[in-house]
Length: 187
Image 1 (tube, one colour):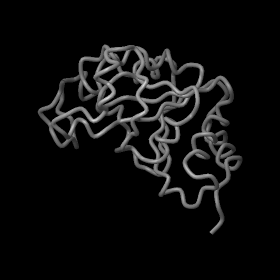
Image 2: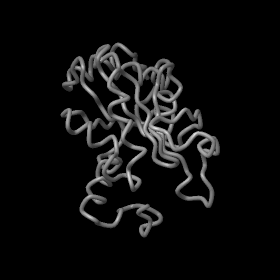
Image 3: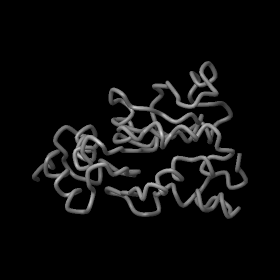
């Protein structure tokens, strides 16, 4: 089986339409891509390469705290509330988000269960309002500034059912969160 290179993946993403300076929220599965030279970090770097130095990548940095009695990021108790989160706690969203979380200079939104990690010059603008969001995925989420910038929702190796933006609309329209283990949870 031939492996996927950073250069080839970046070229495919540019062919798809990613351009310099774009912002993209990415949901991805490394295991669905086949063999990737350099693994998850290669996918992160390829997306950033496709958008150039002005581009910004957002990935989920969600934790399992929503499904437990206690916060899963214990270091949040010490730091929060803040505009951006210094936590190094890993995400349960997979290898690609964790590779984005491990990059130098990355930023993380402040939310104990549904934080986002941003890499690139627009990261602070996209993430800073999340700490004021009254719900997991509602107003104040990084979705709002991403949409205002005509940003990308990009899935790599996953279906559209993985796009967290759907929950934003459920929240705004006061619909139940579909697919959530605790449908009554809104705050």
